[in-house]
Image (tube, rainbow, N blue to C red; front, side):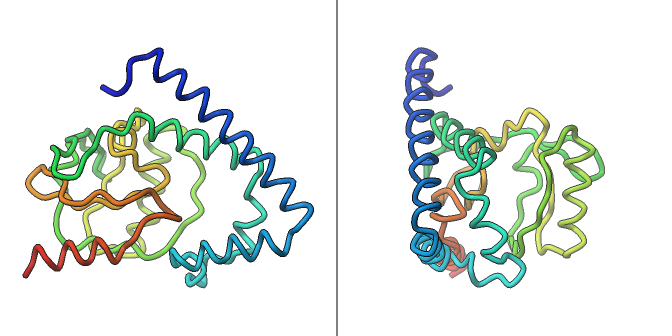
Length: 201
C-alpha cells in the first residue's frame, strides 16, 4: 500500500521542509502584518463557512495558526495524504471501527443515509479507546442524524481515507461515489448534497 519506503521518506522530507517554511513565513507575516493576515485568513474561512458558525469564533483559531502545535498537526496531515489510496469509483476501504458500545465492526456495517454534522467541538487527542469513545458521546449528546462509530487506536480508517482533519465521502455498496477535498478549507458540502440528491432522484 502506498509509495515504496525510500520514495515515501523522500516525499516526507520534502513535505517537512514545505511545512517548516510555511509556518516560519506565516509567523513572520502574522507578527509584521497582523491585520492583513487576519483578513486573508477570514476570507478563506468565509469560503468554507467556518466564519458563519457562532460557536467557532475566529478569535479562538487565528492565534493558533503558525504555532508549534499547528506545525505538528499540519505536518501529520500532509504526511498522511502521501499515503492516500482512495479514488472516486474505487473500492472503499472497509476499515475496522468501534461502536460506542465497544463492539468492533467494519466501517461498511454502520453506513446509512442521512449524515448531518453541524458543530465543531474542542476535543483533546485521545490516549486510548476509552477517551475516543467518551469524545464520541459528546457528539451523541447533540443528536446527530447518523450512526456514530470511532476509529481504532491504530487510526486505520483515518489513514486509508486520508480523513485528517476531515474529509467528506459518499460511499454506496462499498464503492466511493464522491471523494471531497480535505477540510476545513477545501471541502464543499454543497458538492456532497448534489451527489446525494442525484442518487435519490
